[in-house]
Length: 482
Ligand code: N7H
Image (cartoon, rainbow, N blue to C red; front, side):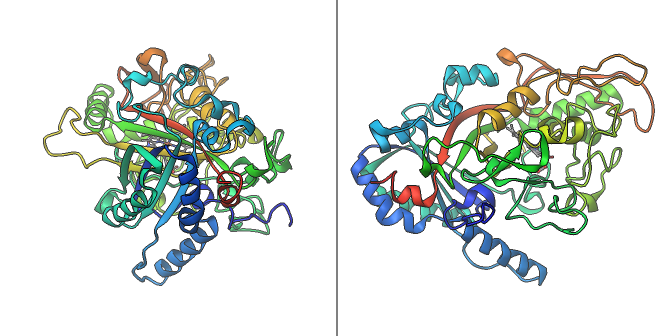
């Protein structure tokens, strides 16, 4: 098999393409009876586990129906399964090799919390930390009720072989907010393109690009067993990521973070600060994110939203940051500029810290009474995939979002170095301290007004987290259940 024939039948469906989900139930569980659990996985779960091959077929079907203006029928139910370091130990016992250091450390470890400036475990959801978590089931589908009936059936089937430690269901937001996260911004616009999977839209002139502006990456960044990015060349293939055991092939690491969003507090803060700075609150919010709520990137629409741009997949990613030298269009600290700096760093470097995101919002819409203070928990069940948690997710959070000095070396128009500040969406200061962000007010197309945004509280708050390995379907059938 050529290295670039991705074995989609063996890779779980959420990893590369994303399970189709308008609702998703996460079941975090502890294995209570290892032998019974293994038998049930082999007997029932495997048959229902959704592969990437399946998600790809569904995706093509959905695209075709959309293209024909037809309604999308059919129940795209998905099931995927992953294990924590504890879960792997339960399943493999004595012979288990050590995997990725961050995975072995785990999301709840004091060192991880220190590295990421996360809130301590005592501040996480009490139920989530009430027992050991060995694994997670992802159950997806077109709506909450059908997902919950699938989930109930799965729980019945597994019986007392597992104990459910925590379960929560996310869903896409209703009506016109579909596809938008709770602050109101369109999400799921930019994902890495994957060689061997994402077609080049202009294969003759831009063979290294999927959609315009979407660089194609070697699949080994996200799935074991394939070439990864070359450390010094954005196009050349690099060695496949090291595997501690051959059964890691077609597997991937999943980072899960339950991120609560303080929506009324965020809105009020934006209103107050926009009034202080004398600017449109929508523009200030866009400068914090780097895109307008419609998804239009500030690099292409610096002062006014452009409703046609955000949803146009051929244009919404076709930009770089490097020529916006003085953050006139988009602040250096804006969320999307921090987490994927594009040509603010060397092109090879930018592609070494990518993730595939596959999260879903959770919690109710803001109620009429929630004008100033959040009273119901809502936010993002953040999920991302990679082959190195340390070099990918953790690096993005700690070296980019939490690092006020990144991106380094930028100058003011008249000289002098810029300190960009924290990512105002997900950045976390040590000890939950206040954060600053440079240049909330745009000096566009010219100007040199110096402004700073001081953000005293987190509007995105971590309330639970775990690291999982999403094994291949072969590993689920063999080494993990024998
Ligand atoms: Fe972010 N937001 O609404 O502000 N994110 N994010 N994210 N995020 C993105 O491009 C958001 C979080 C990334 O390729 C968009 O698809 C919120 C974490 C990456 O240009 C919006 C939360 C991490 C990208 C948001 C949250 C990331 C990205 C634009 C938490 C990793 C792609 C839509 C509640 C550490 C960047 C899009 C690119 C995009 C928001 C979390 C990373 C609107 C509210 C924890 C890599």
